[in-house]
Image (tube, helix red, strand yellow):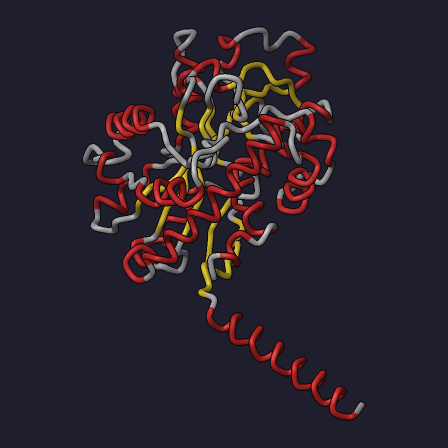
Length: 339
């Protein structure tokens, strides 16, 4: 009995030491990400242990505002990975010899996936103040920052009826603050993101009047970015990270496109986003997320041209050089085709 007891203690100590050694061997990966539905694959990969399978200890740092806020942290390696909307700030950093790369999808407004949508205050719709896009004139609207992807689509809504960005009062707010501003009537309308669109409609704060897929189908609205530090110092871990992320993308598509395991994925989303009501996720318009992590190159080039024409970037970004899909392609090779 004594020998048996000693053996048990020995194996317990051995297990503890091996687990501690494993934890020490795992590389810390600081990630910047917004707590919104388009970040689903990151949260899924974290919660389901896909990053740990790759020997990575992912530390998620929620960013309230846009991807533009992550750029300086990606440049210095304080963040090794970022995920947010496409923005001029990133392109300017790249132009200043900081080779941040777009490496995977984080939100494409493909047809039927208008997860970004124009919402208008419900009282404006009820009173007749808003009847069509032309009534956006003079309204206070918001984007997360100057020179971001949703600013482009905001202009498209206006141009549809002969208006421009000069015809509205443009504010800068985080997605999470837009519904608050609509509720307290300091904002009239905005392009908003799921699940905050569904939440605004559910609470009678706003009316969803159009999905962005109706005005700009297939816009590459958001992406995953790699810091040059991550790619140069830890190339194998950068590949492993993408394997885990693509597994998360596929779980998301299984849930929202095939209704397979949806309850589990919704539970993860309620943990990591600001919307804690699981019922809201059955009302959302799903995010377009490529199960292979691919991005829409044409959209990226069109939007880069817009940033250049508006003066947000001095030089036209070389999208072919900025996008590096080798990590996503490696993940697909490892995981096989999505079925």
